[in-house]
Image (cartoon, rainbow, N blue to C red):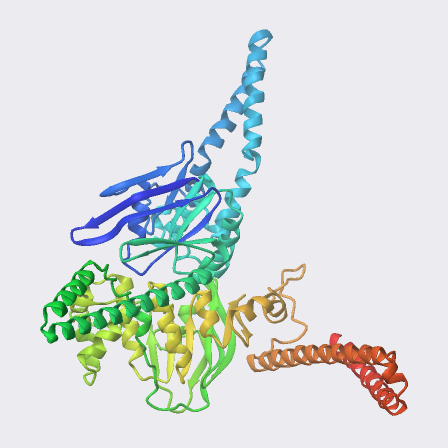
Length: 638
């Protein structure tokens, strides 16, 4: 065991965050801390690191072990460059290296016992330096920074000039390089692109220490953790397994608790009815029996009703009218900023009913493309057209559609006056606004809260083409699941940018990957994208090569349009399906052929000339079909 919490409690006024919570984390264990927004996850991390005091209970870190903590928001005003800032994580190694260099200089002028003494110190230091992998620390620094999405050209940037998300990435890199015995990470994937998240997964899987992670990224949690710690209504519970295992066990537990509660309520109603009937007899014995039952009822430990999850709410997305089959056509679109080419000469189409996820590294131009389509920004060249009867619902990260002086409730009710108060409250509750929260001013909300209001409005818009920029940012897992169900039931068309791989896997029917200034098309979800990524990127978006004079070498064949890519991928899936069916048929026939051979050895068969002839004919037909199938299998395999 490396960390334990015993009987931890924390309240803010009447708001109970944790009540008598206990858990432990073993050496090298990877643990997720989950719960709805506001449940107390970040508070628990702050209690563990001592940033805030607990009301009661103990936090125990094993003696001699080190702890590292990454908060959601970072203040960094050191004046250092990015490289120098993360280099501070290796300060002890750098000091050791400096000592080694000083001793090397000193030994040139020493002899005798002094030389022997300094040589002993030198050998001890160099051995310790090698054990700490000191000769590789500079390449380790570079590897971590690149893994977190920084280019070498970024290394010299001052941390004071970075955005909040970039500062968080620098802090994460610095923390990983210190290699504490246990890492506490609060939403580490929030500011990472898909490649960086994938790199972090691999890093944490191989990390020689324990990790406690707060995250709403279910794909990330499924890959990394082996235990889930849940905080709900002030209670802490542990579940073995990854997020999917936790979700299944949690559902079973919820159903069992609800059944237990319903059974007890039924028993209470039964006892109350019996008591009432006994009292109605108005006899001494019946009254005594009624009183006896009342005392039993009073002693009963009445169960609290299990919390009803927000998934009870159903957001129904329904377009007011159906669009034409062709929803969007983009032709030869290009966009760049000074010193930065985003995309060039891209063309694609979106058909009615498609759910298209737009993915790619940070800074490649995904959000810019959505802004161009919504005429918030202009393209450098090219054009785009929307189809017949297309009505757009746009969700942007700046939330331009909100009125800062209105309350949340009025923002919804003014735009949708036909909705009842109950319906509005149910919709807002699905996006985590309950009770008096609905009367907060939009201007007083955080960026994440404004995002949830914008999303709630969009869900009611009746548009038939939704364009969404990072719709799951700042949503907890329950709200993400509600949004996923709503989009999957939606009969209109969706184009969205997201870094949430689980969300993409659940909702996308097609993926456009913005890589090397162009789009690669994948007809499938995120798992299909992972399977085909290397193959299709090499085919349709390979980096340009240059001749000895520095001129770009022409591609052997022009890039295929998205429609041609779609046809090629459909053809490949058909080939794979035929290949599988052919293998299954071959296996079935070979099995039958072998069983005929066994039958022919049985006396009741080989003494029956009619049955023998039937089997011989069947065996001959099998041989002919197998010969054809073998040829087909070879062709499909090639």
